Structure formats: C-alpha cells, structure tokens
Image (cartoon, rainbow, N blue to C red; front, side, top):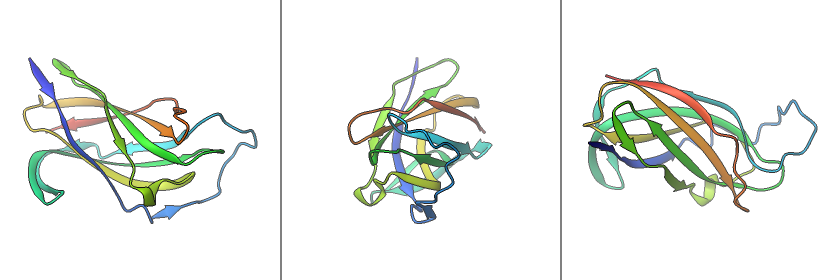
Length: 145
C-alpha cells in the first residue's frame, strides 16, 4: 500500500496582491472563505530545494484567493485523494508575514512523494483562521505525469 506524503507546503509570493477589496457580498462570514483555488494542470517529478534540503517528488503548484471578515487566516489543511493510495490530511502553519485577513492570487506549492501513482489527483484545501474556524473545503485536480 502506498502512503502519499506531503513533504512541504511552502507559501511563496505572498506580496502578489494582498488585501484587495473585491468582495461581492456585504454579509459577514463566520470564518475564512476561499474565493478562488487553482492548480497547474500537471505536475512532474522534480528536485526542489526546501529548507536547505534537496527534495525529489511531484512539485504541485497552485494559487489561492481568500478572505475572512473577522480573523487572520493562519493555516492550510491539504487532503489528497489519490486512487489506490492511502493519504492523511496535512496541516501547515502560514508564515507570520502571511497571516492576514484577505489575499488574492497567492502562490503556493508542495512536494508529493515521487512514488505516488501517475494520473489525476484531487487536492482539497481548507483554510483555518486564528480562532480555528474553517472554510468550506475547495477542490482542484492535478494530473501526475
């Protein structure tokens, strides 16, 4: 049985468009809201540098836009649905500089075990804010090549 592991979730480029104000709703929410989540269509095995170490695996990249009317978003929870593999949810803290209430087109990436089977992988992301309120999960699909 293959166990898929996320080696790292690294938030990058947080200065891209932080704090835009294009909310279309005037009502308050009770936690974070994912406004948009996209992933590259495909991911290939690559060697990437994470925390001064070279890691080889599927380099999965995406962007996310979000807002929270009351609290800073502090964490991501990532769930992978890989046919024929057992996975566990992984929770990652955002860097303090990235813990904000609203951001647009924030780039992020993580590395998936290179032994994961090729084919489509559903990636579900849930945001968590400073008082542990969670967003509704949002899903994207990446094809491992």
